[in-house]
Structures are given as structure tokens and as C-alpha cells.
Length: 452
Image 1 (cartoon, helix red, strand yellow):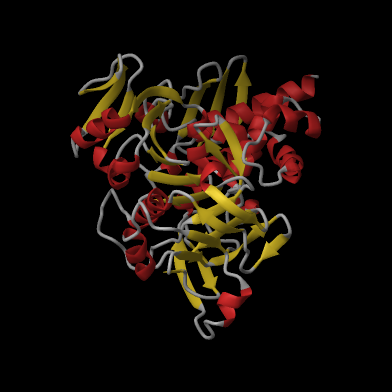
Image 2 (image 1 turned 90 degrees about the vertical axis):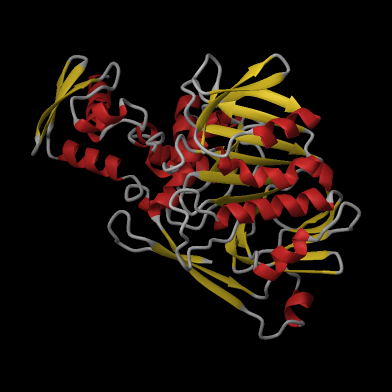
């Protein structure tokens, strides 16, 4: 797989090309997932082979993989599909587990299936990240797997399979819009600010999900042993906009052991984790059905620090596809404070190199197929802020600043991140800082460094 990117303007779609040596297939209980170019510990590979072995819980694993693939096909906002916009799921082998990830075409729903060590019995050939082919015949076959069916899983086809399918090379090319790429960065930063807000076990989880309304916006809060649905926000509640976006959880309910709900302090985005036998299926939803993760702005403050890029280079070299990235250990090995490691992980997240696991409350290493050198293009607000700084438009005045623009002077408060621009008045910080606040913070940090 390769991503064709050059000096393109922001918001211009790149092209992602998938090339598979053969189509994925399920024959006689043997599921062979074809892979397409990626990175592994051993280096770049055109068709990496990560795992071969038995999945001890075949039916929930098949249903979970279908759920991830269904999210990749879905547009929950403006659902009319655009031809050729189907993206294959991403898979990462972290050694003791396999993680399958996808994003909805509208950019507002992120899905991940984690097959954990307890359900995998086989051999790990390498660690790394790639895409996997999930085609229509494979989807039909996965839907037929029953609870007693055996399932042998191969992530990456061995040479024998490839040579027996001569001429079966599969190639796909799809647009890869930058808002979709930015979503991968935003969602891991937003998830890292979430805490568990509620939990149901067994049939209580099943009843709750089946009784949810399909439309509108509701708030969900723990009430004793139950989750209570309300039409208004209450302390500790989680916002659920467009409950139909949880639809891919429903086919998994027959395997559900528990449902956990996560949310940030401001009750905006939410995450819904279904515990299955030996695995977890997680959906993270944007604050509104029409709102993708790409515009949330959660990464911008970390990206605006002077050290973030250099620190990311150092921290990135220390990552080895670990299932859990330990910030304290990285700080010690990199020789930088923990807060700078967190900012570096944000930078690496924008480059698709880390995700966040809510159940483990930890980052994990993976590599997505796009160029980290284009981080600035993926965040136009940050690019505009740096333009203002370079033009000398920022004038500090204690805890405030004036930013001069062609549209007039903007007054910025460094203390609370407020601004007199239309962006701030429209969003009040709910979608990250505006370009004027970012520019003022960059200049203020530079002034502190000079005074030292």
C-alpha cells in the first residue's frame, strides 16, 4: 500500500492504493486475510505476514470483524454513498494481540476490534501495521460462522497460498481525504481524556442497547446498577448524539459480557466498549451525528509547541509496536519530561503512529500509511497560526495579546484561551483553539524561552 502525496493544498484528497497478492478468503474454517503494504519491526513490507493460528472464539471474532468492516462502509451523516470511497480496515499486530480499526466515511465514528491473547493460539511472525482485504464474498462467509465452527486465522498469506492463486492479484485505489486522516489523530487525543462513566453486565447491557432510541440526542448516566437515559445533561452523564451510530454493536449482543461507557468531563464525544469472550469491540462517536472528528482541534496545542516535532522523532524511534506505551518508561529512555512525551505522542498520533486503548488507559503503537511530514497540511488552523507568527502579527500584553489580521485586530486572553474572533464566539473552545489563540501561545512560549 502506498499513499501518493506531494505538495498539495490542504483538504485535497490523496490516493491510497491497496495491492493484495490474492483476495482474502474463508475456506473450510481457514480465514486468510490478505495484507497490503505496511510497516513491520523487520521494516517496510509489500505484503507482511503477522500471525497464523486458531481463534478460540470464532463466532464473536467473525462478527466483530464484520462490525469494523461495516463502519468503514458507513456514512452516518448524509448517507448517500460516494462510489469508490470504501477503505479497507487497518490491522496492527502488537505481539500479544491483533487490533482491527476503521473510520466511517463521514469521519464521525471510529471502530476497533481487539483480539486479545486469550483468544489467539498460534505463531506471531512479525509485529506491525497493514491493511486487510475485506471483500463481499468474505463478508458473506464471515456472517455464516457459528458458535461451534472452528476458525484458523492467518493475517498475511503464506507463499503456498499465494502461488496456488496465480493471477489473483487485487488492486484498489480510493480517495483518502485529509479530514479522514485527521480523524485518526483527533480521536486518540480525545479518547485519552475520557474516563469510564458507566457499566452494565450480561443481559442488562443487552436490554439497554436494544431499548435506545434511534434518533436525536440523549444523555446516559450510571444510576445504581443501571444506565439511565435522559433528554438533558446531568452530572456524570455522557452525550449520545445519533444513537443509530451504535448499530454495529447489535449483532454482537449475543456474545456480550459487559458494556462500558466512556466520556470526557465536558460530556461531548463518547466511547462504547463491548466486552466479548477474549476480545473487545469499541465505537467512539463524535459529539454530533453531522460532525466528524477531523475538526475537533484537540491536537493543536500540543502540535504548536516548539519541542513537539523533535521530541516526536526521539520518542518515535523508541516505539516497537508495543501493546501499551508506558509514558514514564519512554520519558526515562528519551530523557525528556512526561508532559513532553505526551505532546510527542500527539504529534505521532497525527502521523498515524499511535492510538489509544480506553480499557488499558494507555497508548499503543501502530503505523498508518501517510506521510508524517505533511502534519502541518492536515491542520490548517495551525498553519494559519504560524503564518500570523511569521508575519509579526502577535503583540503580547501580559496575560493578553493582540493579533492583527486583514479582518481587524483580535484580542486574545492567554489565561482562558478566549478570543474576539467569530470562531471563538461560535464554538467557545469546544473545537480547540482558534488560529489567533494558537499564534499568541506560540509567541508567548518563545518569549518565556528567551527570558530563561
